[in-house]
Image (cartoon, rainbow, N blue to C red; front, top):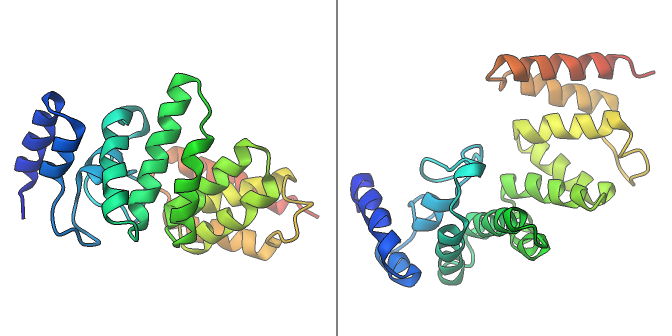
Length: 208
């Protein structure tokens, strides 16, 4: 298996070669579920519980390289959900930065969500919210929260308390919302997250 240092060098050299050559060189073969690929290197989200490799913050994603790497990975390994999610992530970022339509990236996120990828479920819910499709977002946010994603737990409770889920076919009850916050308490990693947790708990306690 190629070492992490070698992979860094290969990707650096990729700045001067074609995307296809980079993909053929950098992708570890044969790929398995937990082997890092160029797609992981360029587009893995650091908060994704299923990510492989170090992860890349949103502002640091090189969308051109990420899309090339992840398109190659999706074509070669279509049954690996994280590649679909990471391709969708890169496409949405690229569109947002260019002020273009971000919807073409959504089917890739949806494919990953349908394959039970936790982070993709959460992000699909966020994308549905962009279109103010609150009730379409609800089951995806809830699924990600049920699978233990802290961001989804916070987000679901916030949306429920805002009233945006009131007209949906299903909305978690007060006990379930409290359970999400109790579970998130063990995941809080900063003072700001703790402050958010306490704010949501106060709002939940004020419900009739």
